[in-house]
Image 1 (tube, one colour):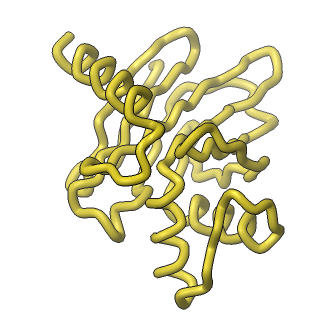
Image 2 (tube, helix red, strand yellow):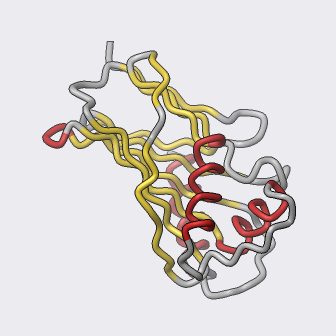
Length: 167
């Protein structure tokens, strides 16, 4: 219950301060949901634009990245980064989510990913290392909605993965 209250408070804090350009906390929010009738695991990651631009510039040889401009190069950088930082295992088998694109809401970029052709889930593990390479204090709220069961996790550099099982 305390974790739930903390997560709700943190989400409200992020939403209330989404208009500020500079922030003193480092947090992302990732939702993972299984949509049984579509046989699809859908992932939405919300990341501060300035933090994502900074990590992409540092990782890719100081290439200037401005996420608000829709270029194929920017999407390729985001896709490549997310594929290295978001690892997913479904039924104990590693899968690679497909990057679908992004939208921008204020100072937040929403990245959409999907794993299709998932008939059922008996276990799901996610490793969420987004921005850990530049911010040691980064926290990644990761919410799972699998088989009508909801779980939330606060992932850190020291504890970067979450697991849910239905056996």
